[in-house]
Image (cartoon, rainbow, N blue to C red; front, side, top):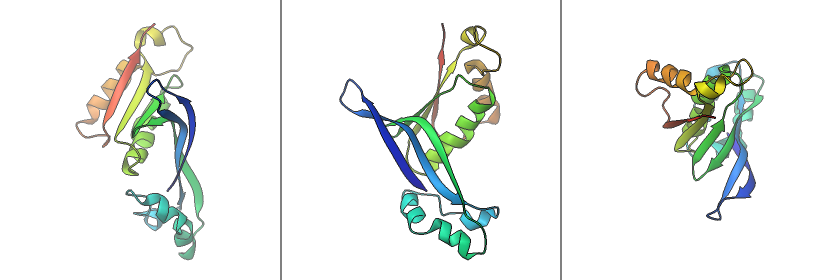
Length: 154
């Protein structure tokens, strides 16, 4: 994986939030070809040192892919999700987890509208109470990344 960040504004304490932080990597139809290459703190180096070449040397096509998050600061990723409900699960079970497994974050924060706010929005957005229920029914330790859900009310 290769990580890239772009700084935005300074916060009150003088530090910066990075927006659109992402991990890029090479993948293949054969899952085992990329297995282990994208894990751990030195994943970015391994990507630069030939993750795609490793896949291609096995006779497969390396496909460029990445995960992107809204904001990252001090190893905390923040996703603001006021879009379709299906993107909440993607944020929780793919984005936050990818950054956590890649050792880029220690915590994921998902900001969602609460039901009272969602009722005033156009059709389709998910809401805090639904996402909380979905997480709770998965059981402890799923997803395997520390998360905070924040609900916003009008």
